[in-house]
Length: 127
Image 1 (spheres, rainbow, N blue to C red):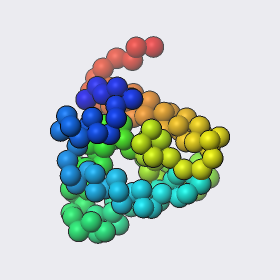
Image 2: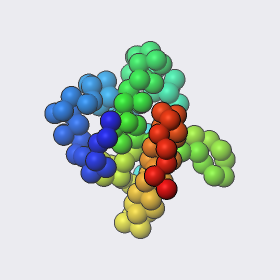
Image 3: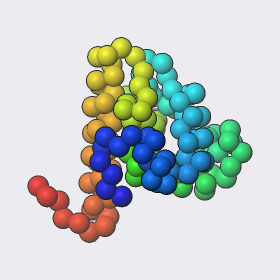
């Protein structure tokens, strides 16, 4: 999709990159964001159930949100559990120092996902 990392949420909406369902998913994720860590421990199935949509629709929206750099998945280093992180540019939690750590985690995850997508699409690494 090639969106700049600083794209504002309303710009994504105005450019019709996001759909109404995507915004509903972000709102539900925000409601479940831990206030200090920013982690969102919610499965795709639970998310779909809360919104009354199919898991497939939820997965499509999550994929669109990830491509739009709104959302990433991470694996907890201690527990191995998956969680979501919302781009701290749109929503963050905790004190300023914690928000810096969240931004770092989000940036690392985004870099990993872009590199994986490039590998999957047969694009050579620039390094």
